[in-house]
Amino acid sequence: MNILLPGGEPFLFPGSQVGCLLVHGLTGTPQEMRWMGEYLAVHGYTALGVRLFGHATRPEDLNRARWRDWLASVEDGYHLLRGACSHIVLMGLSLGGALSMVFATQFPVAGVVAMSTPIETPDPRARLLRPIFPLLYLVWRYIPKEKTSGGQDAQATEEHLQYPVYPTRGIAELHDLLAELRRALIKLHVPVLLIHDRGDDSVPASHAQVLYDRLGTSDKEILWLENGGHNIPRGIEREKAFEAAAAFVSRVTGSPA
Amino acid sequence: MKSSPHGGEPFFFPGGRVGCLLIHGFTASPQEMRLLGEHLAGQGHAVLGIRLFAHATHLEDMVRARWRDWLASAEDGFHLLRDVSQRIVAMGLSQGGALALILAARFPVLGVVAMATPFDLPPDPRLRLLRPILRPLSLALKSIAKGPPTWVDPQAAVGRVAYTAYPVRAVPEVEGLLAAMRQILPEVRVPALLMHSRGDTLVPPGDMERIHDRLGTAEKTMQWVEHSSHGITLDADRETVFAAAADFVRRVAGGRS
Image (cartoon, rainbow over all chains, first blue to last red):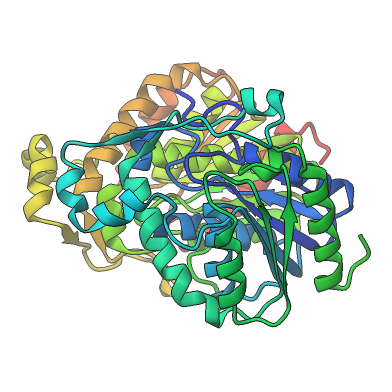
């Protein structure tokens, strides 16, 4: 009767008063962020990897999710982390990056690391179809996934825990969340580190540049990877990303790495 | 009792080697477990009070909730707490007690405390009539207002964070959860403490006896309190409840924490 997919559970690695709140991507699980959490914990930080509602259970559950549920999941993790930490940095992958930035306009955080984060739904067909979505949803519940190329650590890819399909409603909710993100960007005034792979074939690199340009904060930076893939925290260049994230945390919280 | 500046957010109090997982009840929030949590933290234990999906947000969110989501929330809490405490005691109020009992049957815990926990839906005459048609009914009737509060101690109502109506669509979900609980009770093989108020007018006191009879463990005790309404973690007997829970943790942890 266990509901959570084995390996997809949220995690909490105890550490210092500086906490990192880690948010995975659409159809993924906390496993996506676990290696990053372990790296940060080794460097002395507390790391909490949330599980977004509808994820790491079964695909049908994701069709019942709304993006405000995901924001609530992030907020839950934030309040739990505040029990142990006085400073919190949010770190997210793709959808997780978008949620982190929206969240940072609503709650006091020390900074945000957003990886492979879109500024609009990457697939143009999804954008076109959004207005007639309620009708479409009657017949079309799941969109098959295509294999992504590049930047993959073969073993990491094989063991990557995710839903085998995109629940259609999940795509619609991502679309709406990104509209909220676009409204929120100018209001974001904490330090932001964007990390993006130039060869990301799920979310093109141009998204990072547009995010950068529209961010309200002047303390912003893009770290470009050459072969990190979309799933940066499990890709070949993850160490580079982890190092940059840890250095970022150290700087924005005034704590030694 | 001080009035709480807190809302319905989950909470985490770092502590010693025993971790207490606290699960609130139907339509309520972590707020109703917070005082118990503070008491246990005062004894040196780690405490994590989760928020069940669709609770403490908007009543409308409950129409999308399924009882598996609540079990997933409980599992989330277990995994987070397990990362910081090797030994866990699961505790819940009302429907939260049912979730704690299910966890106790499926996950390695030291023991379980189930407070004011129902064996089945309350014997409300309206419910008996409408039970088979609640799902279609919920399309027309979204919620049913709660009756006037029945607190014995008026302080219990201060800072209360809970929905003021019962969401009709969620009632069959509670029913499903309790059916699942009844099925696994014989598989609970860790020490169990049950608590109930003789003054509970929502969940019949006899339900504690029915749960007690079905529990698989031989190490099970029933503790009555005399003066409280259903919400025994907030009402007149709360200190007795806190002391009994803390005592139970001490006992199952082998006298050391």
